Image (cartoon, rainbow, N blue to C red; front, top):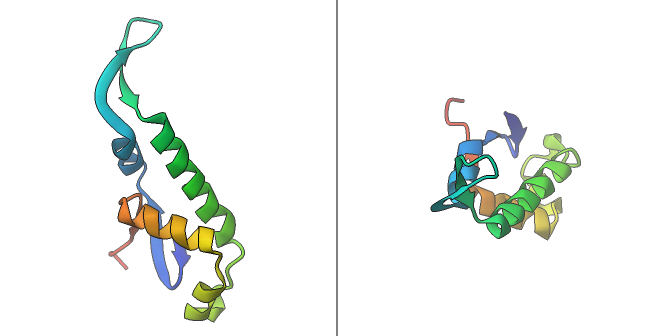
Length: 94
């Protein structure tokens, strides 16, 4: 987990996978059935995760709420979208 804006967050990998599933299955080259995913949705969510992870190092944690105003629009959009989708989850055990 990482602290951001005074709270701890983690990525729900299973949540990411479930958000990208289409509900169908396909057969791979070995004849095994595998879960089909929406590649477009997966790539968009992957880019958002990359955006969030690449900016976290640049935020001054000591500034608290003031740091929120210095984050880029792309970071805030990605962060809020990932929270809304349940991929970034606030640790409530704190």
